Every structure is written in C-alpha cells, then in structure tokens.
Image (cartoon, rainbow, N blue to C red; front, side, top):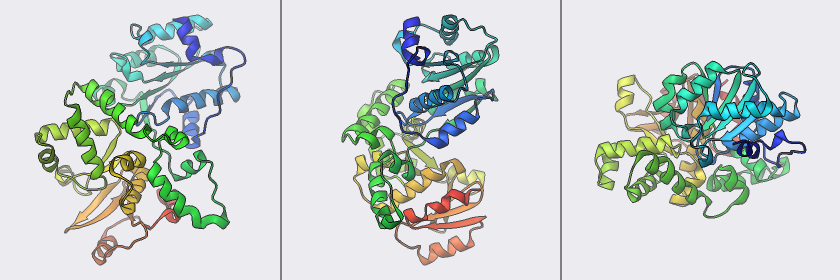
Length: 392
C-alpha cells in the first residue's frame, strides 16, 4: 500500500511542484477559511466539474503558505480498485505509519470519491470522532449522500461545485474584455452559452467530450449504481429533459411520452437530479401547494444542454444561466393566473431574465404586484454585475 499512497502524494518527496492549473478563487478561499474548523467539508457536484483539482490546488496553497508540513497532508482517490479491500481507518493508519504520526498529531485528509467506500458514512464518522484530522471529501452522487447523511449530522457541510460562470470562463479561455471592446461582451457571452462551464471542455474544446461525459454519468452514476438495465430509455429520458430545460413539467406527461409508468418517470427524474445533470425548481407558494405544483427543469451545464438540443433559444439559455448563478439562494418560480416570473429567492430577490427582450404587459403587472425586497430585470451580460450585490 505504501507505494500506492506515495503515488497519490508526490509532495512527500523533495522537488515536487504542482502543474499549472487555473484557479477558482471563491471555492479555494472558502476551503482555506475552513482549515481550522472541525467539520468535514464535502465537495459535491457534477462529475468532472473540478472537485479533484480544487483539492490539489488547496494542498498546493497550504504547502506554499506554510500552513501545514507536506507529510501532514494526505490525498487518496477511493475509487481506486487497488484499495478496494482496505477500509478507511486502515488506509489512514498506513499513512500515519509511513510518517510516524501519532493519532494526537493533526493531519489534513483529502478523500476523493469517498462514497465509493462501503458504509462510507460510518467510516467517516469514526475518523471524525477518533482522530485529530481535518477532512475534505468529495462525491458525485447526491443520492448516496442523501441516504446516509444522518450519520454525519452536525459533522459536515456540503459545498456544491458549480460549472464555471461567465467571468471564470473568460479567465480559463484567456480572454480579456477591455473598456474599449465592451461591445464584444455579448459575442463572448453567447459563445459561453454554447460552450458551458465544464473546466476541461472549456480548456480543450474536444467535440465529443460533453456527450461522453453525459453518457459516463448515465452509465456509472445512474444505471450501474441503481441497477437500471433500460439504458436506452434512460438516454431518451435525458434528451427529453434537456429539450424541456427551463419549462415546468408534468410527471404524467413525461411518462406518457416515454411509455413508462409515472412512478418510473419520477424515479428517473430524481436520479438525474441526484447525479447533478439537472436541477429542479419548485413553484413559489405555501408548502402543500408547492409540493403539488409542477417543478421546472434546468440543465446543470449549458454546454451539455447545447450538445443535446442544439444551440438555440438564447432567452432560455440566459434564464438557465441566471438560475445557475443564484442556485445557492434557493430560487423558486412565480406563477399566477397563467403568468410566470422566473425567480424569487429565500431572501426576497425577484428576478426576471429577458435576453434582449421585454416583459409582456401582464408580466409587468405581476412583477409590480409581487412582494420582494429587491427586484431585477436582467437583459443580458451587461446586467450580470447587478447580481453581485443583490443577495447582500
């Protein structure tokens, strides 16, 4: 096992240097700020969204800033078949033995794809309770986290890693928009809407990458994990979800289109949400009404959506982007007498996304009558700065 662990932790040996990687400052700063807290930080989000990269960037930052000795930092990917027969305590014990670290000495554990461990939640709890360790872990499956999280209540906090936003996309693409070239903002933004925010795809632009990613998630995180054999049915269901992105849906209608039972359609929908390929948004209203009302679907990444549906309907893509920007604020959509407004958040922020267009007279009236702490109408990329302070 020692050889495997050294392979995962090259900073234990002299001369190590992290390859040049693009930074995601917001996530890194939040992770660094949590180094002294006891809680387990669980990074979640779409497969290949950059959770592993964030772990390595934080490790690099810790070493360069002198926040921890390299030998006190341990990374391992727990989906490695070579470690399949080892429990988490056994792996950590082997690590401590390599460096002669007692259980009283603090270490920093980076546990990638921790949900691959059988009974991972109990193993994590044992580490939390018995060792002096700060734990960062990751998972690409919300269903596994949901079903087991009771063991970790009060011991962990979730950090969902989202796709690159427009500003990050510009940095990853080495694009700078000067004041003299502000007229090009819309052109770059529309390119972003087509490309999306999966970091590796933004950097490499390999044509098949996003389709292969979606197929990989459907195969590994949905079909294989949950024992579903109707693979083509799952793929057809996903295409239907992408085509209906930004729209309210009926479970019964989805079931009829695919000739499956409403229970099957509902289960598929939940599994796609748990794999982070889609997000579901409830309607604003009292609890009972909200539970019964149709939800709206949004794609988790605009590039994946465009790959499956074609690059069309800029208004819908813009609305999808705004949702991704405010997801952490708990958005719901507003619906009254056949009229819909895009989002109202937990903090009373009302938002209507209209890409180079205007609200109808009836929408304007509902917008005026809807109670909110702050109201925004966003018409394009030049309005995005309004979101930066709107939730404060």
